Figure 1 (cartoon, one colour):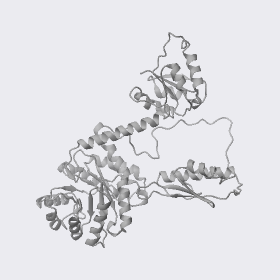
Figure 2 (tube, helix red, strand yellow; figure 1 turned 30 degrees about the vertical axis):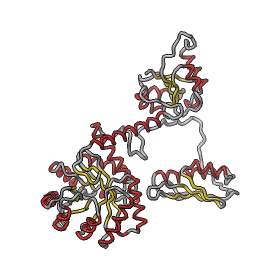
Figure 3 (cartoon, helix red, strand yellow; figure 1 turned 90 degrees about the horizontal axis):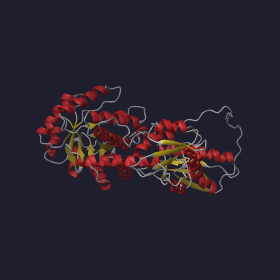
Figure 4 (tube, one colour; figure 1 turned 45 degrees about the horizontal axis):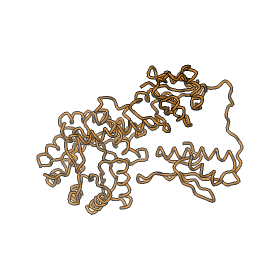
Length: 499
Protein backbone atom coordinates (compact mmCIF):
# COMPACT_ATOMS: atom_id res chain seq x y z
CA UNK A 1 0.00 0.00 0.00
CA UNK A 2 1.37 3.41 -0.98
CA UNK A 3 0.79 6.13 1.64
CA UNK A 4 1.05 9.92 1.47
CA UNK A 5 1.31 11.92 4.69
CA UNK A 6 0.11 15.55 4.64
CA UNK A 7 1.63 18.01 7.11
CA UNK A 8 2.50 21.70 7.61
CA UNK A 9 5.81 23.54 7.57
CA UNK A 10 6.55 23.32 11.30
CA UNK A 11 6.09 19.56 11.61
CA UNK A 12 7.72 18.62 8.29
CA UNK A 13 11.04 17.44 9.71
CA UNK A 14 9.39 15.58 12.58
CA UNK A 15 7.17 13.78 10.08
CA UNK A 16 10.11 12.87 7.84
CA UNK A 17 12.14 11.59 10.80
CA UNK A 18 9.21 9.50 12.02
CA UNK A 19 8.18 7.82 8.76
CA UNK A 20 11.59 7.23 7.18
CA UNK A 21 11.04 5.58 3.79
CA UNK A 22 7.68 4.02 4.63
CA UNK A 23 5.61 6.84 3.11
CA UNK A 24 5.89 10.07 1.12
CA UNK A 25 5.33 13.57 2.51
CA UNK A 26 3.08 16.32 1.16
CA UNK A 27 3.82 19.74 2.72
CA UNK A 28 0.64 21.82 2.66
CA UNK A 29 0.80 25.62 2.61
CA UNK A 30 0.21 26.18 6.34
CA UNK A 31 2.56 26.51 9.32
CA UNK A 32 0.31 24.48 11.66
CA UNK A 33 -0.58 21.02 10.37
CA UNK A 34 -3.86 20.99 12.30
CA UNK A 35 -5.07 23.90 10.11
CA UNK A 36 -5.03 21.85 6.89
CA UNK A 37 -8.32 22.19 5.00
CA UNK A 38 -9.64 20.25 1.99
CA UNK A 39 -8.93 23.26 -0.25
CA UNK A 40 -5.34 23.62 1.00
CA UNK A 41 -4.77 19.88 0.63
CA UNK A 42 -5.93 19.83 -2.99
CA UNK A 43 -3.87 22.94 -3.77
CA UNK A 44 -0.75 21.18 -2.46
CA UNK A 45 -1.56 18.07 -4.51
CA UNK A 46 -1.86 20.13 -7.71
CA UNK A 47 1.39 21.96 -6.86
CA UNK A 48 3.42 18.78 -6.29
CA UNK A 49 1.63 16.64 -8.90
CA UNK A 50 1.29 19.00 -11.90
CA UNK A 51 -0.29 16.30 -14.07
CA UNK A 52 -2.97 15.49 -11.50
CA UNK A 53 -5.80 17.03 -13.56
CA UNK A 54 -4.75 15.15 -16.70
CA UNK A 55 -7.54 12.61 -17.37
CA UNK A 56 -4.95 9.98 -18.27
CA UNK A 57 -3.03 10.47 -15.02
CA UNK A 58 -3.80 8.25 -12.03
CA UNK A 59 -3.09 9.41 -8.48
CA UNK A 60 -0.57 6.82 -7.30
CA UNK A 61 -1.47 6.69 -3.59
CA UNK A 62 -3.89 4.33 -1.86
CA UNK A 63 -4.18 6.31 1.37
CA UNK A 64 -3.60 9.90 2.47
CA UNK A 65 -3.07 10.61 6.15
CA UNK A 66 -3.99 14.06 7.44
CA UNK A 67 -3.07 15.10 11.02
CA UNK A 68 -5.27 13.62 13.73
CA UNK A 69 -6.19 17.08 15.03
CA UNK A 70 -7.61 18.24 11.67
CA UNK A 71 -11.36 18.85 11.49
CA UNK A 72 -13.49 19.15 8.39
CA UNK A 73 -15.15 17.06 5.70
CA UNK A 74 -12.57 15.63 3.30
CA UNK A 75 -14.98 13.29 1.50
CA UNK A 76 -15.08 15.43 -1.65
CA UNK A 77 -11.28 15.66 -1.74
CA UNK A 78 -11.10 11.87 -1.32
CA UNK A 79 -13.41 11.50 -4.30
CA UNK A 80 -11.21 13.74 -6.44
CA UNK A 81 -8.07 11.84 -5.41
CA UNK A 82 -9.71 8.45 -5.80
CA UNK A 83 -8.32 7.19 -2.51
CA UNK A 84 -9.09 7.27 1.21
CA UNK A 85 -8.23 10.33 3.30
CA UNK A 86 -8.04 9.34 6.97
CA UNK A 87 -6.95 10.89 10.24
CA UNK A 88 -3.42 10.01 11.19
CA UNK A 89 -2.13 10.28 14.76
CA UNK A 90 -2.54 13.43 16.84
CA UNK A 91 1.23 13.82 17.06
CA UNK A 92 3.68 13.38 14.22
CA UNK A 93 6.10 11.24 16.22
CA UNK A 94 3.44 8.46 16.33
CA UNK A 95 3.47 8.01 12.55
CA UNK A 96 6.22 5.41 12.83
CA UNK A 97 3.91 3.32 15.01
CA UNK A 98 0.87 3.82 12.76
CA UNK A 99 2.28 3.16 9.28
CA UNK A 100 2.99 -0.59 9.66
CA UNK A 101 -0.77 -1.10 10.10
CA UNK A 102 -1.64 0.53 6.75
CA UNK A 103 -3.38 -2.05 4.60
CA UNK A 104 -4.40 -4.24 7.57
CA UNK A 105 -6.49 -1.81 9.62
CA UNK A 106 -9.40 0.31 8.38
CA UNK A 107 -8.54 3.83 9.47
CA UNK A 108 -11.15 6.46 10.32
CA UNK A 109 -12.21 9.91 9.14
CA UNK A 110 -13.36 10.72 12.69
CA UNK A 111 -11.04 8.95 15.15
CA UNK A 112 -7.30 9.75 15.16
CA UNK A 113 -5.22 6.72 14.17
CA UNK A 114 -3.31 6.70 17.47
CA UNK A 115 -6.54 6.29 19.44
CA UNK A 116 -7.94 3.77 16.99
CA UNK A 117 -4.85 1.60 17.05
CA UNK A 118 -4.45 1.85 20.81
CA UNK A 119 -7.87 0.23 21.11
CA UNK A 120 -7.07 -2.30 18.38
CA UNK A 121 -3.74 -3.29 19.93
CA UNK A 122 -5.28 -3.49 23.38
CA UNK A 123 -8.09 -5.75 22.19
CA UNK A 124 -5.61 -7.91 20.24
CA UNK A 125 -3.53 -8.27 23.40
CA UNK A 126 -6.53 -9.16 25.56
CA UNK A 127 -7.79 -11.67 23.00
CA UNK A 128 -4.37 -13.35 22.99
CA UNK A 129 -4.39 -13.52 26.79
CA UNK A 130 -7.83 -15.15 26.76
CA UNK A 131 -6.63 -17.64 24.16
CA UNK A 132 -3.46 -18.51 26.09
CA UNK A 133 -5.41 -18.97 29.32
CA UNK A 134 -8.00 -21.21 27.67
CA UNK A 135 -5.22 -23.44 26.30
CA UNK A 136 -3.11 -23.41 29.49
CA UNK A 137 -2.40 -26.64 31.39
CA UNK A 138 -2.44 -25.86 35.13
CA UNK A 139 -0.71 -27.67 37.97
CA UNK A 140 -3.98 -27.63 39.96
CA UNK A 141 -7.41 -26.06 39.73
CA UNK A 142 -9.41 -24.33 42.45
CA UNK A 143 -12.97 -24.49 41.26
CA UNK A 144 -12.68 -23.41 37.64
CA UNK A 145 -9.56 -21.33 38.32
CA UNK A 146 -6.29 -22.57 36.87
CA UNK A 147 -3.19 -22.28 39.05
CA UNK A 148 0.40 -22.95 38.02
CA UNK A 149 1.58 -24.64 34.89
CA UNK A 150 1.53 -22.21 31.99
CA UNK A 151 -1.60 -20.40 33.18
CA UNK A 152 -1.61 -16.68 34.01
CA UNK A 153 -0.49 -15.69 37.50
CA UNK A 154 -3.64 -15.06 39.54
CA UNK A 155 -4.26 -12.16 41.93
CA UNK A 156 -5.36 -12.94 45.47
CA UNK A 157 -6.82 -9.93 47.30
CA UNK A 158 -7.02 -10.05 51.09
CA UNK A 159 -9.82 -8.34 52.95
CA UNK A 160 -7.94 -7.41 56.12
CA UNK A 161 -9.88 -8.22 59.33
CA UNK A 162 -12.79 -9.55 57.27
CA UNK A 163 -14.18 -11.38 60.30
CA UNK A 164 -14.55 -8.11 62.21
CA UNK A 165 -16.13 -5.94 59.54
CA UNK A 166 -19.73 -4.81 59.36
CA UNK A 167 -21.58 -7.00 56.80
CA UNK A 168 -22.28 -4.08 54.46
CA UNK A 169 -18.66 -2.93 54.57
CA UNK A 170 -17.38 -6.47 54.00
CA UNK A 171 -19.68 -7.12 51.04
CA UNK A 172 -18.79 -3.72 49.56
CA UNK A 173 -15.07 -4.37 49.90
CA UNK A 174 -15.34 -7.82 48.30
CA UNK A 175 -17.39 -6.37 45.45
CA UNK A 176 -14.74 -3.67 45.00
CA UNK A 177 -11.96 -6.26 44.82
CA UNK A 178 -13.87 -8.29 42.25
CA UNK A 179 -14.39 -5.21 40.10
CA UNK A 180 -10.70 -4.35 40.29
CA UNK A 181 -9.72 -7.73 38.88
CA UNK A 182 -9.09 -10.09 41.81
CA UNK A 183 -9.10 -13.79 40.96
CA UNK A 184 -9.32 -15.05 44.55
CA UNK A 185 -10.86 -13.40 47.63
CA UNK A 186 -8.90 -14.00 50.85
CA UNK A 187 -10.70 -13.39 54.14
CA UNK A 188 -8.34 -12.23 56.86
CA UNK A 189 -9.23 -13.49 60.35
CA UNK A 190 -8.59 -11.07 63.20
CA UNK A 191 -6.80 -12.13 66.37
CA UNK A 192 -10.05 -12.03 68.33
CA UNK A 193 -12.19 -13.84 65.75
CA UNK A 194 -14.29 -16.83 66.75
CA UNK A 195 -15.63 -19.67 64.58
CA UNK A 196 -18.99 -17.91 64.20
CA UNK A 197 -17.21 -14.82 62.80
CA UNK A 198 -15.45 -16.97 60.20
CA UNK A 199 -18.70 -18.66 59.17
CA UNK A 200 -20.45 -15.30 58.83
CA UNK A 201 -17.64 -13.79 56.69
CA UNK A 202 -17.58 -16.78 54.35
CA UNK A 203 -21.36 -16.63 53.98
CA UNK A 204 -21.19 -12.96 53.01
CA UNK A 205 -18.38 -13.62 50.53
CA UNK A 206 -20.37 -16.45 48.92
CA UNK A 207 -23.37 -14.14 48.53
CA UNK A 208 -21.28 -11.49 46.77
CA UNK A 209 -19.02 -13.45 44.41
CA UNK A 210 -18.53 -16.80 42.73
CA UNK A 211 -14.73 -16.40 42.84
CA UNK A 212 -12.73 -18.86 44.97
CA UNK A 213 -12.66 -17.86 48.65
CA UNK A 214 -9.82 -18.54 51.11
CA UNK A 215 -9.48 -18.15 54.87
CA UNK A 216 -6.31 -16.50 56.21
CA UNK A 217 -5.42 -17.89 59.64
CA UNK A 218 -3.11 -20.32 61.43
CA UNK A 219 -5.73 -21.07 64.11
CA UNK A 220 -6.89 -24.72 63.68
CA UNK A 221 -10.31 -23.93 65.16
CA UNK A 222 -10.97 -21.12 62.71
CA UNK A 223 -9.70 -23.14 59.76
CA UNK A 224 -11.89 -26.07 60.78
CA UNK A 225 -14.93 -23.77 60.82
CA UNK A 226 -14.00 -22.43 57.40
CA UNK A 227 -13.79 -25.96 56.03
CA UNK A 228 -17.16 -26.82 57.53
CA UNK A 229 -18.73 -23.64 56.08
CA UNK A 230 -17.10 -24.23 52.71
CA UNK A 231 -13.94 -22.53 51.47
CA UNK A 232 -11.81 -23.23 48.43
CA UNK A 233 -8.40 -22.53 49.95
CA UNK A 234 -6.70 -22.41 53.36
CA UNK A 235 -3.92 -20.01 54.37
CA UNK A 236 -1.76 -21.31 56.01
CA UNK A 237 -0.34 -24.63 57.17
CA UNK A 238 2.89 -25.08 59.11
CA UNK A 239 4.10 -27.53 61.75
CA UNK A 240 1.87 -25.89 64.38
CA UNK A 241 -1.37 -26.99 62.73
CA UNK A 242 -0.55 -29.57 60.05
CA UNK A 243 -1.38 -32.58 62.23
CA UNK A 244 -4.83 -31.14 63.00
CA UNK A 245 -5.84 -29.62 59.67
CA UNK A 246 -4.17 -31.81 57.03
CA UNK A 247 -6.29 -34.89 57.82
CA UNK A 248 -9.43 -32.77 57.34
CA UNK A 249 -8.12 -31.64 53.95
CA UNK A 250 -7.04 -35.14 52.83
CA UNK A 251 -8.68 -36.19 49.59
CA UNK A 252 -10.71 -32.96 49.29
CA UNK A 253 -10.63 -30.31 46.56
CA UNK A 254 -9.65 -27.60 49.07
CA UNK A 255 -6.18 -26.20 48.34
CA UNK A 256 -3.72 -25.50 51.15
CA UNK A 257 -0.98 -22.87 51.24
CA UNK A 258 2.01 -24.29 53.11
CA UNK A 259 4.58 -22.00 54.72
CA UNK A 260 7.89 -22.54 56.55
CA UNK A 261 7.84 -22.40 60.33
CA UNK A 262 8.35 -18.95 61.84
CA UNK A 263 11.91 -17.71 61.41
CA UNK A 264 12.97 -20.71 59.33
CA UNK A 265 13.76 -21.11 55.66
CA UNK A 266 13.61 -23.44 52.69
CA UNK A 267 14.36 -26.65 54.60
CA UNK A 268 11.39 -26.01 56.90
CA UNK A 269 9.09 -25.36 53.93
CA UNK A 270 10.17 -28.61 52.26
CA UNK A 271 9.61 -30.59 55.48
CA UNK A 272 6.12 -29.15 55.90
CA UNK A 273 5.19 -29.88 52.28
CA UNK A 274 6.40 -33.47 52.59
CA UNK A 275 4.35 -33.90 55.77
CA UNK A 276 1.21 -32.42 54.18
CA UNK A 277 1.64 -34.76 51.22
CA UNK A 278 2.10 -37.75 53.54
CA UNK A 279 -1.19 -36.90 55.24
CA UNK A 280 -3.07 -36.99 51.93
CA UNK A 281 -3.52 -33.34 50.94
CA UNK A 282 -3.77 -33.27 47.13
CA UNK A 283 -3.80 -29.59 46.24
CA UNK A 284 -0.72 -27.88 47.67
CA UNK A 285 0.51 -24.30 47.14
CA UNK A 286 3.90 -23.29 48.55
CA UNK A 287 4.76 -19.91 50.07
CA UNK A 288 8.55 -19.50 50.44
CA UNK A 289 7.76 -16.03 51.94
CA UNK A 290 8.83 -12.84 50.18
CA UNK A 291 10.73 -10.58 52.58
CA UNK A 292 10.43 -6.77 52.33
CA UNK A 293 13.14 -4.53 50.93
CA UNK A 294 15.66 -3.92 53.69
CA UNK A 295 15.03 -7.37 55.17
CA UNK A 296 16.97 -9.53 52.69
CA UNK A 297 14.54 -9.51 49.80
CA UNK A 298 17.35 -10.83 47.59
CA UNK A 299 17.74 -13.90 49.79
CA UNK A 300 14.02 -14.59 49.65
CA UNK A 301 14.01 -14.31 45.84
CA UNK A 302 16.82 -16.90 45.73
CA UNK A 303 14.69 -19.08 48.03
CA UNK A 304 11.77 -18.81 45.62
CA UNK A 305 13.95 -19.71 42.66
CA UNK A 306 15.47 -22.69 44.48
CA UNK A 307 12.08 -24.00 45.55
CA UNK A 308 10.61 -23.79 42.06
CA UNK A 309 13.59 -25.68 40.65
CA UNK A 310 13.08 -28.40 43.28
CA UNK A 311 9.27 -28.60 42.92
CA UNK A 312 8.33 -27.25 39.45
CA UNK A 313 4.85 -28.81 39.67
CA UNK A 314 3.79 -27.08 42.91
CA UNK A 315 2.12 -23.66 42.46
CA UNK A 316 3.94 -20.89 44.30
CA UNK A 317 2.41 -18.08 46.40
CA UNK A 318 4.12 -14.68 46.01
CA UNK A 319 3.37 -12.07 48.70
CA UNK A 320 3.81 -8.86 46.70
CA UNK A 321 1.99 -6.92 49.42
CA UNK A 322 4.88 -7.56 51.80
CA UNK A 323 6.95 -5.24 49.62
CA UNK A 324 4.50 -2.61 48.35
CA UNK A 325 3.14 -1.87 51.83
CA UNK A 326 6.65 -1.27 53.16
CA UNK A 327 8.09 1.11 50.59
CA UNK A 328 7.15 4.74 49.99
CA UNK A 329 7.00 4.54 46.21
CA UNK A 330 4.17 4.47 43.70
CA UNK A 331 2.74 0.97 43.71
CA UNK A 332 2.25 0.66 39.94
CA UNK A 333 5.97 0.51 39.17
CA UNK A 334 6.77 -1.60 42.23
CA UNK A 335 4.01 -4.09 41.40
CA UNK A 336 5.11 -4.31 37.76
CA UNK A 337 8.71 -5.08 38.76
CA UNK A 338 7.61 -7.58 41.43
CA UNK A 339 5.36 -9.30 38.92
CA UNK A 340 8.28 -9.69 36.52
CA UNK A 341 10.36 -11.24 39.31
CA UNK A 342 7.43 -13.46 40.27
CA UNK A 343 7.18 -14.74 36.70
CA UNK A 344 10.91 -15.51 36.66
CA UNK A 345 10.74 -17.55 39.88
CA UNK A 346 7.66 -19.51 38.77
CA UNK A 347 4.99 -17.85 40.94
CA UNK A 348 1.32 -18.72 40.44
CA UNK A 349 -0.48 -16.44 42.93
CA UNK A 350 0.19 -12.72 43.46
CA UNK A 351 -1.00 -11.64 46.91
CA UNK A 352 -1.99 -8.12 47.98
CA UNK A 353 -4.11 -6.69 50.79
CA UNK A 354 -4.30 -3.29 48.99
CA UNK A 355 -4.51 -1.94 52.53
CA UNK A 356 -2.78 1.45 52.81
CA UNK A 357 -3.70 4.57 50.85
CA UNK A 358 -0.46 4.45 48.87
CA UNK A 359 -1.16 0.90 47.62
CA UNK A 360 -4.72 1.50 46.45
CA UNK A 361 -4.99 0.12 42.92
CA UNK A 362 -2.59 -2.77 43.55
CA UNK A 363 -5.18 -5.39 42.58
CA UNK A 364 -5.67 -3.82 39.16
CA UNK A 365 -1.93 -3.23 38.77
CA UNK A 366 -1.01 -6.83 39.57
CA UNK A 367 -3.74 -8.14 37.28
CA UNK A 368 -2.47 -5.98 34.41
CA UNK A 369 1.15 -6.87 35.15
CA UNK A 370 0.31 -10.59 35.19
CA UNK A 371 -1.25 -10.21 31.74
CA UNK A 372 1.83 -8.35 30.51
CA UNK A 373 4.12 -11.14 31.77
CA UNK A 374 1.97 -13.77 30.07
CA UNK A 375 2.27 -11.98 26.73
CA UNK A 376 5.98 -11.35 27.32
CA UNK A 377 6.59 -15.05 27.89
CA UNK A 378 4.58 -16.00 24.81
CA UNK A 379 6.51 -13.52 22.63
CA UNK A 380 9.85 -14.34 24.28
CA UNK A 381 10.47 -10.63 24.74
CA UNK A 382 10.67 -7.97 27.41
CA UNK A 383 7.26 -6.68 28.63
CA UNK A 384 7.08 -3.64 26.34
CA UNK A 385 5.07 -2.68 23.23
CA UNK A 386 2.46 -5.30 24.13
CA UNK A 387 -0.68 -3.23 23.63
CA UNK A 388 -1.24 -3.04 27.41
CA UNK A 389 0.91 -1.28 29.97
CA UNK A 390 1.09 0.26 33.44
CA UNK A 391 2.32 3.69 32.35
CA UNK A 392 0.33 6.32 34.25
CA UNK A 393 2.63 9.32 34.73
CA UNK A 394 5.66 8.62 32.55
CA UNK A 395 5.33 8.52 28.75
CA UNK A 396 7.00 6.34 26.11
CA UNK A 397 7.17 9.06 23.47
CA UNK A 398 7.47 12.74 24.27
CA UNK A 399 5.29 15.13 22.30
CA UNK A 400 6.97 17.82 20.23
CA UNK A 401 8.03 20.70 22.48
CA UNK A 402 7.58 24.37 21.58
CA UNK A 403 10.51 26.66 20.82
CA UNK A 404 10.79 29.84 22.88
CA UNK A 405 10.02 32.83 20.58
CA UNK A 406 12.38 35.79 20.45
CA UNK A 407 9.70 38.17 21.68
CA UNK A 408 7.43 37.15 24.53
CA UNK A 409 5.69 38.54 27.60
CA UNK A 410 6.72 37.06 30.94
CA UNK A 411 3.60 35.92 32.80
CA UNK A 412 3.07 37.05 36.39
CA UNK A 413 0.41 36.46 38.98
CA UNK A 414 -2.05 39.31 39.53
CA UNK A 415 -2.08 40.82 43.00
CA UNK A 416 -5.75 41.82 42.66
CA UNK A 417 -8.70 39.61 43.38
CA UNK A 418 -12.29 40.77 43.24
CA UNK A 419 -15.09 38.58 44.57
CA UNK A 420 -17.50 37.52 41.85
CA UNK A 421 -20.92 39.17 42.41
CA UNK A 422 -22.49 35.85 41.36
CA UNK A 423 -20.96 34.20 44.42
CA UNK A 424 -18.26 31.64 45.20
CA UNK A 425 -18.10 27.97 44.18
CA UNK A 426 -16.64 25.30 46.43
CA UNK A 427 -14.98 22.36 44.65
CA UNK A 428 -14.38 18.90 46.13
CA UNK A 429 -14.34 15.30 44.98
CA UNK A 430 -16.36 12.24 45.91
CA UNK A 431 -13.80 9.44 45.39
CA UNK A 432 -14.26 5.98 43.95
CA UNK A 433 -16.12 3.70 46.34
CA UNK A 434 -16.40 -0.05 46.02
CA UNK A 435 -15.36 0.01 42.37
CA UNK A 436 -17.93 2.63 41.35
CA UNK A 437 -16.68 5.77 39.62
CA UNK A 438 -16.16 8.94 41.61
CA UNK A 439 -17.17 12.45 40.66
CA UNK A 440 -16.33 16.14 41.10
CA UNK A 441 -18.69 18.24 43.23
CA UNK A 442 -19.08 22.00 42.59
CA UNK A 443 -21.26 23.74 45.20
CA UNK A 444 -22.79 27.19 44.68
CA UNK A 445 -25.31 28.87 46.98
CA UNK A 446 -28.02 28.09 44.43
CA UNK A 447 -27.01 24.64 43.15
CA UNK A 448 -24.78 21.59 43.59
CA UNK A 449 -23.32 20.22 40.36
CA UNK A 450 -21.60 16.85 39.92
CA UNK A 451 -19.66 15.50 36.95
CA UNK A 452 -16.64 13.43 35.90
CA UNK A 453 -14.63 16.00 33.93
CA UNK A 454 -13.59 19.63 34.34
CA UNK A 455 -15.00 20.43 30.92
CA UNK A 456 -18.54 19.23 31.58
CA UNK A 457 -18.69 20.96 34.96
CA UNK A 458 -17.38 24.25 33.56
CA UNK A 459 -19.84 24.07 30.67
CA UNK A 460 -22.70 23.55 33.12
CA UNK A 461 -21.52 26.36 35.41
CA UNK A 462 -21.43 28.76 32.45
CA UNK A 463 -24.78 27.56 31.15
CA UNK A 464 -26.34 28.18 34.57
CA UNK A 465 -24.78 31.67 34.59
CA UNK A 466 -23.02 31.13 37.93
CA UNK A 467 -19.93 33.21 37.09
CA UNK A 468 -19.61 36.79 35.85
CA UNK A 469 -15.87 37.54 36.03
CA UNK A 470 -13.24 36.16 33.64
CA UNK A 471 -10.66 35.65 36.37
CA UNK A 472 -13.19 33.65 38.38
CA UNK A 473 -13.92 31.42 35.38
CA UNK A 474 -10.19 30.92 34.77
CA UNK A 475 -9.64 30.03 38.44
CA UNK A 476 -12.52 27.52 38.40
CA UNK A 477 -11.17 25.87 35.25
CA UNK A 478 -7.80 25.45 36.92
CA UNK A 479 -9.24 23.97 40.12
CA UNK A 480 -11.71 21.70 38.30
CA UNK A 481 -8.88 20.23 36.23
CA UNK A 482 -6.89 19.52 39.40
CA UNK A 483 -9.95 17.77 40.83
CA UNK A 484 -10.33 15.72 37.63
CA UNK A 485 -6.68 14.62 37.81
CA UNK A 486 -7.10 13.71 41.48
CA UNK A 487 -9.96 11.40 40.53
CA UNK A 488 -8.03 9.90 37.64
CA UNK A 489 -4.98 9.09 39.75
CA UNK A 490 -6.81 8.12 42.94
CA UNK A 491 -5.45 11.05 44.92
CA UNK A 492 -7.11 13.31 47.45
CA UNK A 493 -8.02 16.89 46.54
CA UNK A 494 -8.29 20.12 48.50
CA UNK A 495 -9.23 23.38 46.81
CA UNK A 496 -6.34 25.85 46.46
CA UNK A 497 -3.75 23.24 47.52
CA UNK A 498 -1.04 22.14 45.10
CA UNK A 499 -1.81 18.90 43.28
